[in-house]
Image (cartoon, rainbow, N blue to C red; front, top):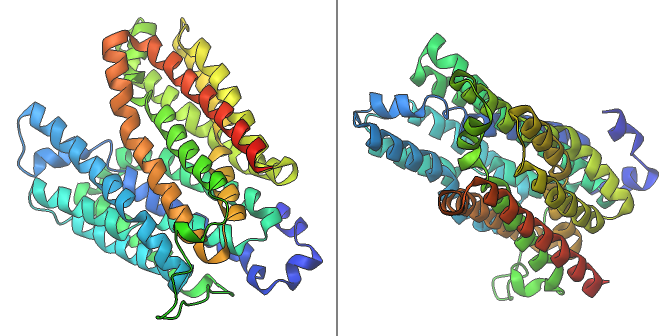
Length: 411
């Protein structure tokens, strides 16, 4: 919090839109962390819950588990632009209240599911009603002073990634202690606390101007004067998540080739998966702060280029710990990308369209998150697992070159 206090300039204090940005950031970090934990904590026990709901064939359990897990992200990708546009029209805080209350109800209902169809339907509902983390990105991007937006979004991103890291750990500990259904009830209760904190503590001083009924809409793609920066960021966000998630399906199988003892494969795979997340958590706020000084686009280009370089040795490692170290370094380089993408969009669009454009950005990232595992699994299965790392390297290098050219064109 010392960085926040030190950053408060006289101009910042005079800006009524930024008077409460520090408290908003803390509440949004808590709410984003808890909702992401709730979305990911079912990973360790999802197959067990599917079996409890009446599915007993092993192959069917795997299929239904994948469908149930992906359902939330699929529906969230569809409605993210809608929630962003409504945030521009009716206020960003209102969207956070809606998302936190909706997620609290949805999580409790998931604990009451009686068959696997209800589970999938309620997971879809959670994605439709949720979106607290993406809504927080919109609020922080628009209510934080522009000169501090990179650091603030990086700090928020750390909370989101921490939720992704902690969620599966909590999901592995709680069900044996309190049961699967009570784990969902507990998650819903914690999100309800986030709802109360959002309702009573978040302040949105300046709400976007409402559009008159007989006027053309102020929001949307048509209102963006220069579409090149936004287009570049949409493609970069999708490319980032596609490249990052393309490796997820093969990690356990790849680690099995590096570890001699079969009993250590899952443990080492867990370290490999956690290493990148930990690196991103540690670097996100620092890279965001650096971007506020040297430019967000410069950090994006540098991070993509460094990631491309780090992917090459991952294709040729000879031990699990080498892969852990390289994934940690890659996490350090990737941590600042999403906050910088949001900052570039925020600085490139009118105030009344920021929510809509950030919503499109989040949908693009979800698209990459869905396509990445499919692409990685296909390439790894047909051309070998090292090829996935090399192909991902090419994608990241292409992204760095694309952003370099886009930046030159926009300067």
